[in-house]
View (cartoon, helix red, strand yellow):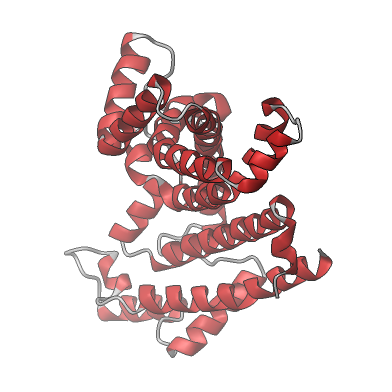
Length: 309
């Protein structure tokens, strides 16, 4: 197990370096002058623009800029935005909000998909199974912004169960409504994946052997079948978490969540390249770490994976 963990950790290093290099190249390779874009139609004297470009070291060759950027990452200093704010402060203000929202959404989707997907597989072809599949198709078909407005109106305004908007109050309890919407939007694919995986596992010879040995369904399903069916679902959950951490921009905008999605959208429109690059770098780190954890979970769920050379 130690060799398996070490190998997975070492694989993270080239992924991180390659991802950050590609991100930096694409963002700073965009056409136009980000400094000139700060002033809109009213352009300042060229001396002011040259001074700002020198201050942010935009005149340096690409490789020098990337080396300075990478050095700042290792010092945990993500630089300063063109408006004078510390990127670290912006990250500290917005990432925890989106992190809470992503964790809550994935937890809701995971629990629903695990329970409903498992029951649908066990009762394949029943009314419950057909109803679950139809419901999943409905959630897949409904655009996320429509689901947001429906939940906001009925659950927030009409029934008053949740606050319709989040705003400045963004603790765990204030994020329930957008978390439920996001959870339901990603639940459908996870449920179908769980159902298909369990149906395939239930048809294996070793499951029939377990029943023939006298093991009860209460023992076979959770201990043997469910454990061996969870690898695809764990992979899907990790992917969904990474997508949510990149920023559920539409959902955060509708519910006025002061998270990553809103901030990143504003930074892109204003050509705040230091903010964009730093945010995306944080997402890469989170995504790589989540997938590292998933790889390690593979080894726990299926010990055979640890010994594959």
